[in-house]
Length: 100
Image 1 (cartoon, rainbow, N blue to C red):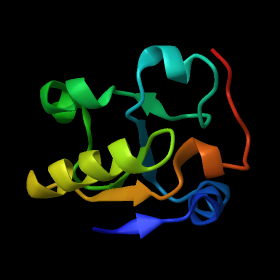
Image 2: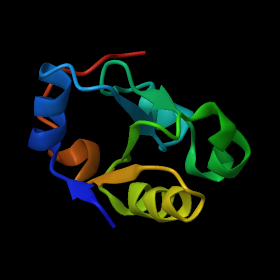
Image 3: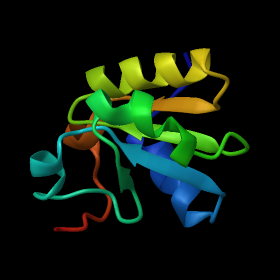
Image 4: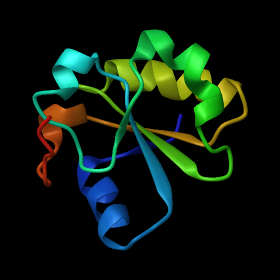
């Protein structure tokens, strides 16, 4: 499974690399704060919303600590998507946060 640190993800965003950030936490968790520009698709709904993802770009999976996003990464990779797990999740994120 491909993984990136939060610092590496932040650098990709600063460099303007075309990526898609998917936050697989529950909506109540995301309401407290998320990475700006990240789309929220709770892990339990990923199977039903995968068609919303772009197979031609890296889909970076984010959760609270890295466990759910690892499961999402494994699932999407098995479905032919370019998926990357952000290790450490939002607990390790030091960049900007969007509230609400």
